[in-house]
Amino acid sequence: MTGQLVALCCIGFAAVNVFFEVTAHFADGPYAEYASAIAVMNWLVTGLKVIGVAVALLSVAKRPRVLSPAHLGVLLWGAFALLGVYALGSVVQAVGMASGLAGSADQIDLAGVAYVLFFLLIAAGYGVLAISYSRRNRLRKGVAILGVLGAPVMLGVVLLAVPMLLLAALGLMPAS
Image (cartoon, rainbow, N blue to C red):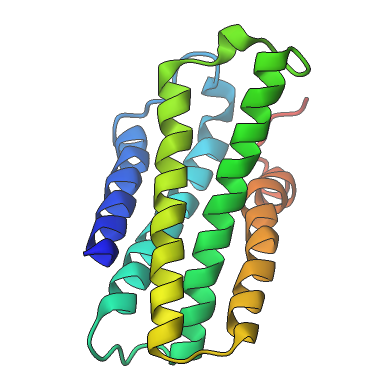
């Protein structure tokens, strides 16, 4: 049941990115100058969310033949850690805003809190899947360690390297 719920959450969250692109949500307004770059990031993140759907469903499949158990285990632990680090970073940011260290408490709204809670929920779901899958398949601890250590690297690539290097090189980021 957890695998299907996590997959459903990923599908729903990917649909938000698709909605943004189909409706040209960022074509007007304060982010219009960044619309092309945001589109690239939206599709990249949508792809990652679709991969997340597959990983969640494969983890509960009776006989997944697409990946070895170790590879799937790394992906599960990586998804758990990536989402957990991202959510934890958002919580730290909110605490900084609430305390006045960075920004203002006025910037925290119900939508932002729901967003962070949603990520915490999905991270917890992947944690349950990773633990269960690792136990069922008797995976070594190194599989979990590799997944957890690889997650911050992936997060850095998605949130820092792609925007700074790829989008700037393609001329999709306006000159600041």
